[in-house]
Amino acid sequence: MLNIFEQVKNAKVIGITAHIRPDGDAIGSTLGMYLYLKKRLPCSDIKVYLDPVDDSFSMMPAVADIISSPDESKVFDAFIIIDCDRERTGDYRVMADRAVSVINIDHHISNKDGSGDINYVVPHASSASELVFNTMDKEYIDSDIASLLYMGIAHDTGVFRFNNTKPDTLRCVADLLEYEFDASNILDVTFFEKTLKQNKIQGEIVLASRLYCDGRLIVGVATEDIIEKYAATKYDFDGVVNQLLLTKGVETAIFMYPKSEGIYKLSLRSCTDTVDVSAVTMKIGGGGHVRAAGADYTGTWQEAEKTLVDMISPIFNK
Ligand SMILES: [Mn+2]
Image 1: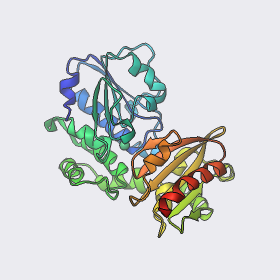
Image 2: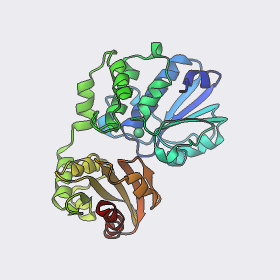
Image 3: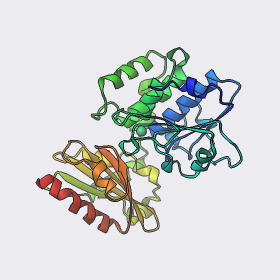
């Protein structure tokens, strides 16, 4: 366990960041930490750096304080990287590399040794938000902080459904719900709601999806055609892989979309222990968790599909 205040109480300049393309957990954990440290260290200069977040998060506290470009000149006494290792902080890494001390709080098994000077990495924790909660002195938590951590835990557990939802996770959630905030509305707006465009895009991807391994593996692709037809961005694909996984009989789902010229972003999910998707993606330079992982693939989606099906089929046939 790490008490974050004890670690940074003498720091005058503090930076906080998470991974590129921040998800609910990255946003909730960093902004929760930000508001907490501002309360504990009102005289320190504390900033939170994240890529622009999806509109669905605009209702959350402190979103307006996010800075979306690295500060090249600042030297941080403490730089806190949450929900990822140093590599995945993208453009914000330069600030970590110049910092006096880097603190890394994460729950990704691919980062189990941590990449900071001080590390608090618990691979089996539900979310970075749950870990951030553990680092706090509870009397300083308020409704805003609680709502952010709640949102982060909800997102990384698929709203308390995935098997990373442990008794400790729900005890943490129970503590957070002692503070007053509209939990139901946060789930609707930040997690469940989709635009009609997003629903249509998901429909197209599901329509063209393919089953392998006797229906235990499903593959869906956001093709260039679909992207062009709907002028889709990466944010339009949130939740698609989880929807594919909900197909009856399916144990592992793969979703792919073109990330940049010649590179596909692969998202893998499993709902059983048969296929460890973290182990699969690590073989092609990615990583993540046993039941949720990702990788970047250089090549076409057809090549990526063949590579993954060839890797996963023997596991199902074992
Ligand atoms: Mn996370």
